[in-house]
Image (cartoon, rainbow, N blue to C red):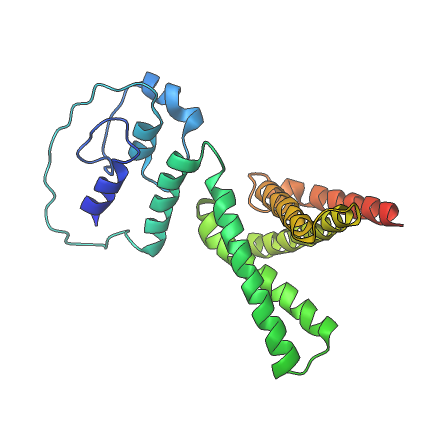
Length: 248
């Protein structure tokens, strides 16, 4: 697995290194100062992050060492570590065009659409619920699934636990509810002004997705979640009020 990861990493490295996955290295302070503001910060392979970020080739000396057989503990390698590694590689190749977190956030949002439709069908046909009840349940469950997956994958390095998880779920659902309103509002406005239906719908989805990503990154998984939760509620309330006034 390490050899495969090293081989893949050479795609983004600016110079050959036999073990860019190592956590045992030394560097001059000026190298860190020149790269620290452009580091991805995804996962824990900081040497790979630095080597992929540096703008000019470095003078590198490698000192070989050999591991003994493990006698305690266990490897950190699991599916989620592989995911983090893939996120880092994607950020270094695609990050200059679009944030890799946004891509992951959007993929999970697309999965949420299928979850929504599945729950809706079960509610209507299996449980014979009314449409409003089934739609509400499908919306809530899809939002919860999206939050859980984003907390586990998109924001694994910032994932919420305990009470912070509960508050994060509330802020996520609030933000996405406003995103849904923005989606419908933009799509309806464009359609009413003679825009093709599919184009109007895609524009609404794009606006809603960008809104959800930007707001949840700031308030749900941002660095100051505790101090900004009330600000989020106030912002969403103001936004909702302005939408209702304009619609009226």
